Length: 172
Image (cartoon, rainbow, N blue to C red; front, side, top):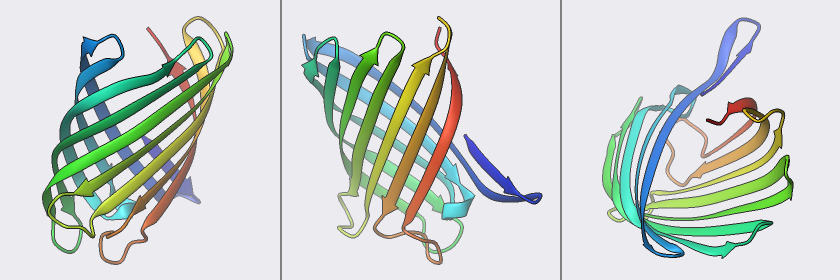
């Protein structure tokens, strides 16, 4: 969840909820299912639901570096503030990298692409770069920079959004 105010006026507000489950097929290969809900009024999106299934491959899995590749197919439904709503089959791909700097710090980068199987103009790219530092056994501080690009944005809205965030993360 991201919210920004300037002089009492909300300038940005975005909510994303994501769940992912996986079942191992082989030591480095898994079948995965993913559901994502997003609401971003400042991008013109009242709500967007995507569901997908695919394969996840751990290309590199060492104590210092991990590299994971994802590919899948699914369905997206987007309710927009203006213009036509979207309902489409989708193809997805992604790459996730993590470098462990020490037992208390790591750098991550996640890049993903979503494209409509019905409309070649509907493509989306996202990149999230992050730095995490462990504060205690339960809490970490995480700084992220997100860039999201949409080929066909909601009419009247820009095609690129960026978010820089600082979060306190609890891991149980």
